[in-house]
Image 1 (cartoon, rainbow, N blue to C red):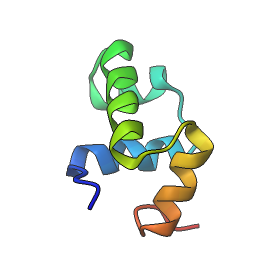
Image 2 (spheres, one colour; image 1 turned 45 degrees about the vertical axis):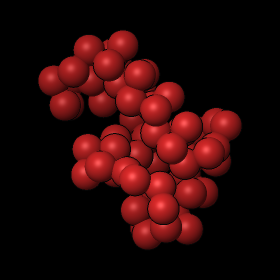
Image 3 (tube, rainbow, N blue to C red; image 1 turned 180 degrees about the vertical axis):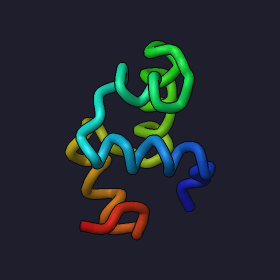
Length: 66
């Protein structure tokens, strides 16, 4: 399937909640760069090209519920 880790899914949910990379970094005690690297890896795993695609993926796969 998509091989997402629990941490990947947590970051996806935060993105779906309109958090910026800076806000996610603060919440998870990461650097902004680390969050941006995670975002890129998640997008590659899920085969999406932007944040909108990531939100659609999350909803379709039950990672995020409206």
